[in-house]
Amino acid sequence: MSSGLLLAFACLGVLSQRVRVQGGQLRTEVGRSDKLSLPGFDNLTAGYNKFLRPNFGGAPVQIALTLDIASISSISESNMDYTATIYLRQRWTDPRLVFEGNKSFTLDARLVEFLWVPDTYIVESKKSFLHEVTVGNRLVRLFSNGTVLYALRITTTVTCNMDLSKYPMDTQTCKLQLESWGYDGSDVEFTWLRGNDSVRGLENLRLAQYTVQRYFTSVATSQQETGNYTRLVLQFELRRNVLYFILETYVPSTFLVVLSWVSFWISLDSVPARTCIGVTTVLSMTTLMIGSRTSLPNTNCFIKAIDVYLGICFSFVFGALVEYAVAHYSSLQQVAAKDRGAEKEVEEVNITNIINSSISSFKGKISFASIEISGDNIDYSDLTMKASDKFKVIFREKVGRIADCFTIRNPSNVDRYSKLLFPLIFMLANVFYWAYYMYF
Image (cartoon, rainbow, N blue to C red; front, top):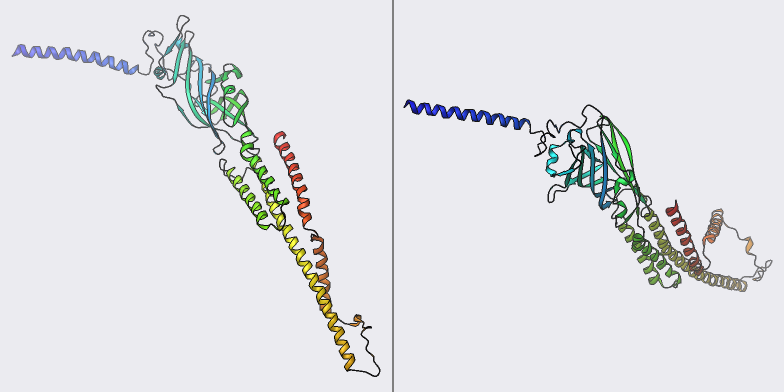
């Protein structure tokens, strides 16, 4: 009994010592969980703390960047932004990671969690994500002099403020800006590694509606409430390809204007034909104007170049319809005036016959001794008229004279002049339009 108890106490003592040893090792591993542990780099990573930047408390870290623009998938005028996929490469020197030799080592991307990396972010980015297929698209490479290369593959949607007043003959300038989120200029300084040559891929892009004209890089300082931050800026100019809009909008609208002129060669009496052409062209122009605005922001602050041209075309199409209305109305007025003139002549003849017959009858029935009535010597100037009747007559005469100034004597001349004036004015409007929006 006593020997069994002694054996049990001895086993418990051994187990307690082993637990204390393992517990000490566990506390040591927990205490070192924030430090880098790489097989074969024990002396290199000793004392490394990923929460402290290189040269902590001293000179700022110089971070050199390069960019590869893989693609610009969309440029949205309605949202005022663009979506691009980029390869972002950052280089900096960490004296704590210097090792002997002249080799470089590419590490597993998951080990980036054990290294200090800059907190770079994309200014004015609406949404961004890091590609994760098949693993996180990151690269970490160490050089013997302590240089760290950190590369990422990112897709981001960035704001691009656009001036659409010359749409679709516009040139837009968009920016891609990079900056540190937490470290100001006293801790981190960003630079382009090779100036304009630090950016590649833009010259090879093929976009649906745009052509990249030029791009340039610059370094700026962003003044925030928390300090002054170094900001890297990439500006690139996108010129819209106008050929697509010429074929889709400008050519059809021009053809509709020319089609509206066909009515000038149709007789004024062909009311259904001319009315059908005028109404059809007006409705077609309205459809074109509505369709040109479907993909653009619904704001009233932009009067675009395409709106101006469609407005010009609509004015000419509507003017052709109004021209027929004026010419047709004038022809009807001319016919009515001829009818009124014929009726007036008939009435004057009838009145003269009635007066002469009445005078002849009175001459036969009534005779005066001292007065002899002669039908051939009647003077109508002695007839008197009331003042109100005189005013009405004068007013009608003046109104008639004013109306005569705007009365078209020959309605067929309206079509004759329109055949010349409409094409001439439309050509002049096109010359001024294209000269202004293409060269000013």
